[in-house]
Length: 112
View 1 (cartoon, rainbow, N blue to C red):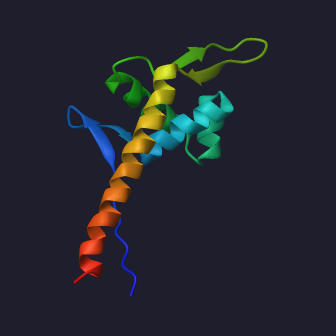
View 2 (cartoon, rainbow, N blue to C red; view 1 turned 45 degrees about the horizontal axis):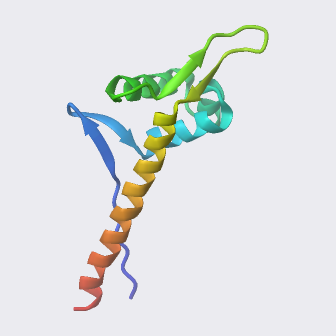
């Protein structure tokens, strides 16, 4: 018999979600597309929902997570700051370490 352990990690700030899997996916999509609109589209989110999530991240972050440019001939866009990119890396690292720890703990059941 093979047991699996499941877990979801999120980080809160002032009792509100700062980062979680969905928000990190949005940041990754923004980084790939250079656009909040395109990122929302790629994740099947409404622009309004994506904007709300990004606004919430930016309000809770210690530093700006994104840089926005207004439209024009080439159109506007949204880019991640270095801090925003670091948040993705750190969150992924936390997640990996959490899963590794939980897998190790699951061995306690397997060893019974």
